Length: 603
Image (cartoon, rainbow, N blue to C red; front, side):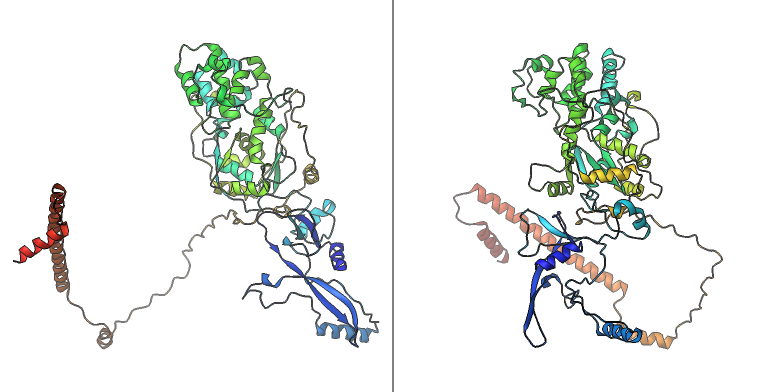
């Protein structure tokens, strides 16, 4: 048994990997056999690792035997060749033999009995035997038609072309930005906000800021699994795209430096907001205040002071756009305290805090036992909630894949949010998932894996102290730096329980050829009267149309008579029920009254 496993390991047939959600595995068992000599004496014990029989199904492969068997014709041919060419024949005892060559699919089998590892959720994965070094000869393998996955790359969350479709419940409301632009127009408060760290938010392209749940969901389901929880890697068609803190700061222009000392990123409890003086100063003694209430006050209160307008506008930007953590958005007590000092409010690393709230919902949750399986189930739901500022991922998608801008159902323009005349974003229909698949299937698709980073002069900008190095990510980044052309089949792993979704273009029908030969018209011969009589004998004649109409009229008359009779009886029953209610002392029931009435009618 030990020799059998050593032989399998030496030939790189199996590898010990973690069990992936949705992948089926094959059961194996040990078959023991005693090898005997020619005189019947015992020679040795032999153990073979084979597939369990109950895996085979009736009428498919139930009667087939999967075992390497030598054909006698092959042995006879070898002996004949040796005799003809004067070759020497040597006898060898092969301990391990393989039925097939290299596999193109991934196959999972359970661990052999008696040789299980102590770790949890571990399976043996059967992978194709490597013919050459991937780091040097990937292009050669692709040209030769080798469609094996590269296990050095990070695995996918969902298998290639098997990403599910769904909707998202996004709490962030980017419409707040044009609303603030419209309400505070031509005021020094608006100019003060645009000159601060939030100024680049008003320079975002308005055409791309309409939230597309289908596009964001498509990039989330195409993500790769990596050990770093602060970076999201996704794949569009075959090329990887990075979404990290540096990309978030480049797109939004928000400060992404280090947090202040002893700063707690968790939100405080809102139960003590009435007793807080800063809350009372800004909102009064109202305990429940929503973002809709703040919008109404900012729009209708003409006597509001400038400092209060500025603070309310900043609360709207932070709580309803950047850090939206509730479906019915309300101001956060912690941010209300921070906004009392506007200069310190602008120095806070809002980009890092907003990204932290955003990326936490997009990555596998760490508080459960099976984080990957939990995220797979969440993305398969009809609706999946996202906190923070997910619009940044959509803006990254438009920047990394410029062809996605062509499927926006809006006129092409270069207007930013600050150039809009209306207090809301341009209204247009949402992006369809079929359009995303169509762009993904384009031959001349250009994907930028790493967008150009615009760093800021802040301590710790775009860097995490708890960064976890991943060898697979490092290997992938080296391939990106060498401009390696990625292919779909290179990405390993992923949930395979979903359907394959690919875009199939409609074939254009060729134009009809006017000069084509037309079918020859055949003249119909009139059938003879004798033949017609013989055919009519098989079908008995029915009544004429006049007789059938008379029968229908008689049936309608009978039905109408029965309906009128039922109506009269119903009327009598109602009268009896009414009398019954008025005379409660009577012991006779309505049923007895009906019988008496019917007897009188007969008499």
